[in-house]
Image (cartoon, rainbow, N blue to C red; front, side, top):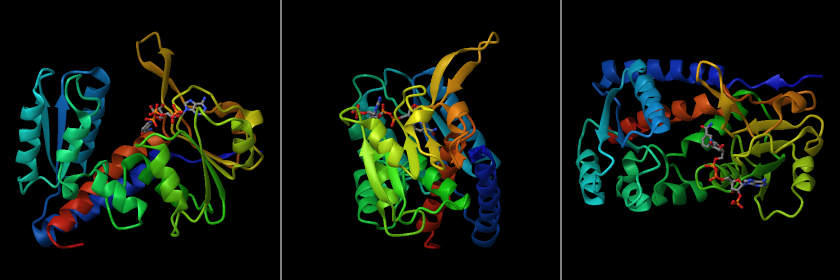
Length: 295
Ligand code: NAP
């Protein structure tokens, strides 16, 4: 029996339609247009393409959107001043600084300068702290997207054994935390694995839901999972180029083999990726509503 494919592309489309309608209502009913600025430092090709995709989506949803390009050699002080300007700009409700930043700029200091009320990436320690104690906050976009995919696909998470491979601050730790929370899409028993884990297969084989964010192509093979597992593959690995020069992508799991054993699985591309940008948009709408006292 083949697994049901969880299409992040389709779910993201559904959420974007909902957001588009919400943005129209906010504009017509309250004169409120959600505003997003994306700050890009330098010209790293991957960063340029991520920022372009974010701006395109913001436009499509009817946001007020600003792309602010800064030179590679911008000083940390100048970047902090820029963030301060957007913190005080009433038309801007969400600020996104595209990572990575050039060497010599302290990423932590820059991210912490963003007002927690405009931190639509959910990386500010205030939002991270609120998430951990289960308070309302901006959830980090990739874990938020995973949660939505599980909920909208009808996957039962309550009581499930969830195994997360990876402990980064942007994926592994937050998704593990969210799955643990006593609420819809959570209430799971969570194990987090990393390179210090002694027997990875012992853990992955126990998983009812396996979330893999290791950044290692096909590190999870079919013999490492049990029948009926739900697999969320966060990994995006560039493993070559087509003759036309387009990147060939693969995830962290051996999709072709595991889809024969799993009950649900996300593809790469078209799985978690499209959800991440969509949740950024959802957070920006939330930020705008909070700013206007509508939420
Ligand atoms: P990261 O910061 O490099 O963290 C990778 C984590 O995986 C680390 O905790 C590492 O353990 C663990 N790990 C690596 N190899 C392992 C192995 N063989 N066994 C067990 N654990 C292992 O990566 P990240 O930022 O979380 O991203 C992970 C992947 O997701 C990347 O491919 C990235 O491109 C992708 N990603 C996709 C999206 C999206 O929107 N689709 C968003 C974010 C990230 P240690 O801590 O011990 O080193």
